[in-house]
Length: 251
Ligand SMILES: Nc1ccn([C@@H]2O[C@H](COP(=O)(O)OP(=O)(O)OP(=O)(O)O)[C@@H](O)[C@H]2O)c(=O)n1
Ligand SMILES: C[C@](O)(CO)[C@H](O)COP(=O)(O)O
Image (cartoon, rainbow, N blue to C red; front, side):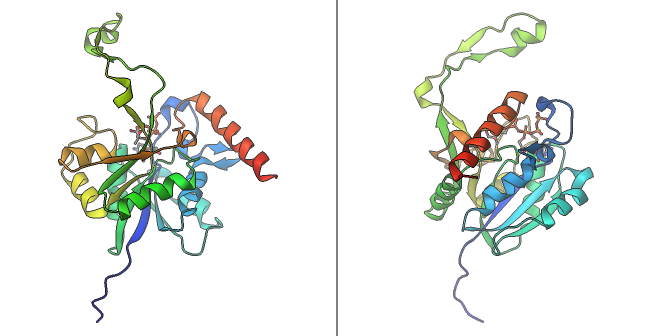
């Protein structure tokens, strides 16, 4: 048997099992449509657009796994791209862990990408992968903030139906709004999820779990179009971005 190491293979795990409560009543968020196409399909295409990604693991709503498999089965994707669908969990962190469990042994670089960020451009995806391949163990795309941010004590305010007292104003120039895909060396990400506390007790993203290990995380430039579709107004913005892309592509 040859001792020549296999080239690093990259997979994208797409947590897509959320309900989309902040978007309002309707189908699970990943299955709601943008320009007639489910958000999840946009997200899968965005990952498959990178030449480096050869496997996409979709972590779907548990009650809709069969429907999601059907939806993705006929999708025209590059020949290099395999798509696997597994059922998700109670929260994002659990869904990501279930996606990691589905990875074959030869995957060494893992992207984790929200289905709720369907419009991320391929250049952003590639920049994250390149930073991991260059040696970073955890990479996040992020943008500087435009709003000033206040830290408050919610227990002293809104929970009692009163205004929330401000505790601090972090220096804005040091803050970044973090997007996905987040990229990881697989061993580091699996170790981070293996030692993670339950969601809500700390990290709201995978990179935060890596930080808890004491491992370094680096930021590369994110993109305005990688915004997270969270509230109804985000749907309006997403449709506008797609309309602009169609106009620019001339169809
Ligand atoms: N149990 C869950 C919860 C969330 N997610 C995924 O994690 C990503 C980011 O989550 P978010 O935008 O908060 O989605 P929802 O949880 O669906 O939104 P909401 O909090 O408004 O219900 C989404 O792609 C979502 O599908 C998941 O895979 N499994
Ligand atoms: C992972 C994430 O998109 C980075 O900004 C974000 O933390 C997800 O948060 P959500 O509350 O699960 O949408």
